[in-house]
Image 1 (cartoon, helix red, strand yellow):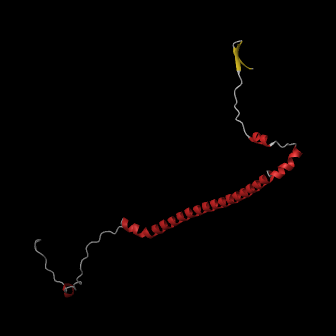
Image 2: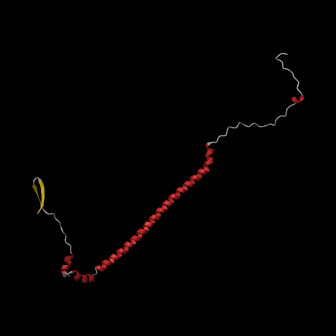
Length: 156
């Protein structure tokens, strides 16, 4: 026997019986490794981000509303206080006007004049007493002299 020729062997029948073929299976294309894309990651977080954003907006709006309401309340209180002060000042003004009219009544003045030592002026002089005259003020004349190297102002 040479090396180039095959050796013929005999095998028992059980070994040489045809094997049962496996059922036909369609081969699947090779699957790429699954990696999570960015879009998929954000899609999972979108409801939480939306709720957080809505909550932050509602919180900010409530802070702005409460601040504005507090300011309006403070201004309303201040306006009410000022209205009360105005009413008190108007009542005081009315009392003062009443007192002025009472004190300037002619019969009261005629009654109080003798006690104060006032005399009634004749009819012609009464108009002159009430008239106002224009008063002009002029500066006093000064003389300036030289005294020992200093200027000295003296009034005459």
